[in-house]
Image 1 (cartoon, helix red, strand yellow):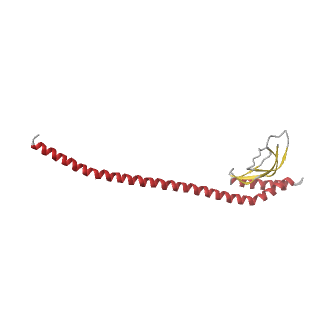
Image 2 (cartoon, one colour; image 1 turned 90 degrees about the vertical axis):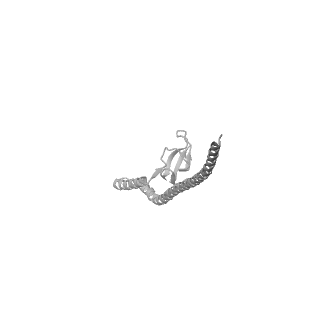
Image 3 (cartoon, one colour; image 1 turned 90 degrees about the horizontal axis):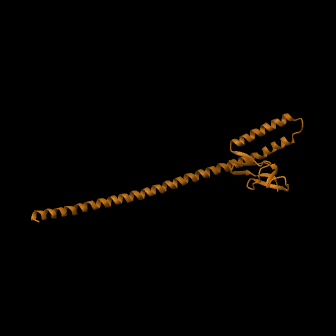
Length: 174
């Protein structure tokens, strides 16, 4: 190799080393920015998940509180509904006008309850469920099914098919 080529090779090596020095800080800087981005992105995702959980928890709590309020209000109305049912059952013969009027009022009240999600439970022939019914009498009858409701003394009510406002008071068989 001649002197010119040696000088060119040396210059090239010097230029290559200088470029490496220049590139290295940029890579470091890029890695630092990536790390910072990843860290902040992770923090954002965690914060978003916490907020989403808070929102869902708050909605569940609000629904529970509304359900509790509805249950308390309906509990206050149920004695009047029970009395209307008793009045219909005890109506004397010849008082069909009064009986039909009371039936209409009772039907209107039950429709109003149904519109807000309250439904009656405890019908004759249903299967006994200790979470929804309260058995105060029990009979043995081979003609009837296992845990079958034979008689309903007081209807029960549930809110949105999950919250028992009042269990039905029943007589069961077998």
